Length: 499
Image 1: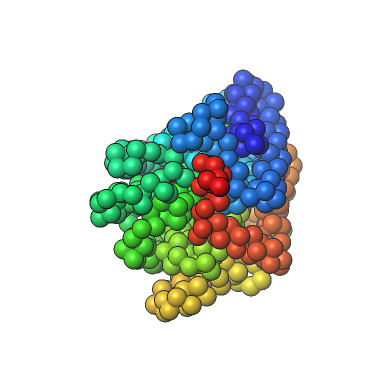
Image 2 (image 1 turned 135 degrees about the vertical axis):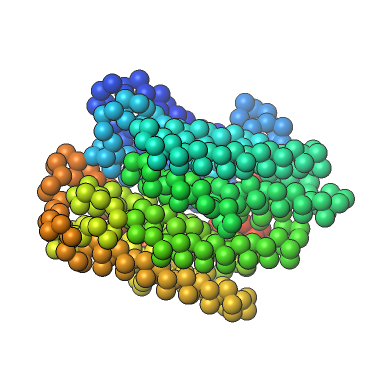
């Protein structure tokens, strides 16, 4: 199984090297597209293997667990790698029309594929220290992408982004050191057993809080999210899209993995804190979005808001709630990345991103209007799109757990999300352009327009499919949630079956 697990990491790294060597010509961009298509094939192969055979694990270099480097995939890891590959392919196609030659020469495609490799590595690692390594790979690549071009607002956003993430890294490393000192291991499957033997369970809870804060920064939860809206509106739209779709979800994934596999000894305390964090994250994110007028800033604050729903699924810690968290992760990556891609096309043809200073898109670019409605309505939770089912499962889980207040908050935040999406529609699409312009898709060169619309249309189609045929996706999420609640198969795959 080692090559099946290593392939989603090796392919984007190899693509990054080749794209960097070919950055002087147009070959670099096509190598990036081909590499991400190959990653999608590898991800499908991995997902099929995990679906048919259950949790799979491999020990790199032949060192047995828990001493060596372990790669492991369960259903959650597999689907996260798959959705990463889909997003990577869509953004790499979109970049054919979005990224100019100067940014290609500066190494955009190499950095992009290193970022994708880091994301896949974080989803597949079975070791806490290597999770730290993959976080650092993502941080270095994302910082390079964030400041690519060297505009003042990019540098400003990049400094805020990297500073807070370095604080998170220090907390992460501190937690790793403390946990290793208490248990003598960093292998996550081994830790799942070792923490039960820790004498001072109160101290273990303190260490759990260290990880909660560290991963909370990565996930952009309340009150640690302010770096995200300060940075995500500054780089190229291709960069914003992959950031919005994937980076914060790695933090959410880490929280779900740690607080189901390892830190499940004091759920009455830790998950109650997560519940409050989820509530404040949803509310502050949606209120921040309501106060903005820049297309990307609105979407950036909504990333924060929607992260709250995923954390809510973890905090409730019931089978249905975890089903909702898994479903929400998959749905949101597709929808949010697509909205940022649409914002890029809108800015290209209207000449701005402030919704009060643009307009006329519905009349002059009806195709773009339709492509916007699909992910925007899905984000707001309109049936029968994917966002409706994601919110429905989360709210139903809250009601079943008698969390009347948190269910009410989740519904109210959904209504406020409708307000923000309606504001974008009314200002950017419905009203006439303030300057009397008629922004048309044909104003863009055909070589740019076709790949950008192809990427947007592909992601919109996936959103519609998930919404219209939700049953197989819900069934998948149920199996993934069952593995999270009963990690015996995960531990056995990594350490070997004691029987």
